[in-house]
Image (cartoon, rainbow, N blue to C red; front, side, top):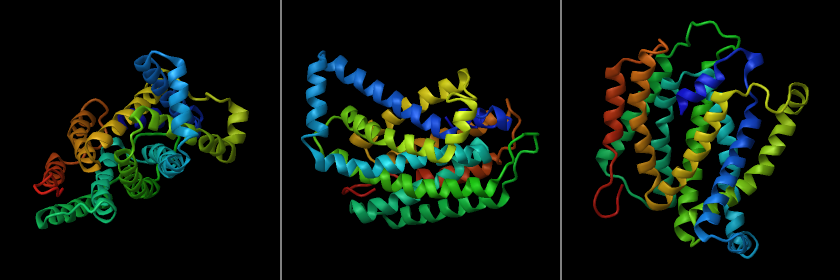
Length: 295
């Protein structure tokens, strides 16, 4: 996914799509997909409407609780595109592994999950590895109409690590305490995220959208990226519901090696030494579930 996002963002400035429009369309895709899944499983539109009324109108407290992650995820999606505008996919993925550290912190304080000494050491190694990536990173020398601002990209990633970890842990708590289906919870998130996305479009890119058009910069790859990113978000919700955020974050680590190998050859972008990546990956694999309900 980061490779595709980088590909769709690393273009001439006049050819790049609006981030707020993309985030809005991702919410639309999630809403349509979850609605279709519920209707197909219940085989009745009336049952879907009744379930929607029960989840939204008859359970306002839980709906209000979902507002928090909905707001954060909308912000995070915009930061995601901003980060990959100024960082290569490999760099982004390595830096984003800091999310494992922030997730562990939030799970420790909010869910009472405990870490062993070995796991604390692994987290410390992870932090050092991410800091090392920032120090040695240099932007691609290839010509691009978009000025590369690595510091802005790294700041976006760090903010994402904290906001995403908090929202993920918070949503895990809400999902596991609720009897509402994962698909209906995602409809809740989308219904709350849509007005937030509309306001973002209006305030941040309203004039540009009116001048250039709503789907300015869109092509086949942008459509594919939007669909896969949206549907991938639904799978993440399923993982959070039936596993936990640490396992989700560790699973993402498997993507890193693939991206490193991919970026070394086809695009000839600067990639980190495989040894450094392997060392960081080893520190991630140390953080695994232990007995007694600990991480």
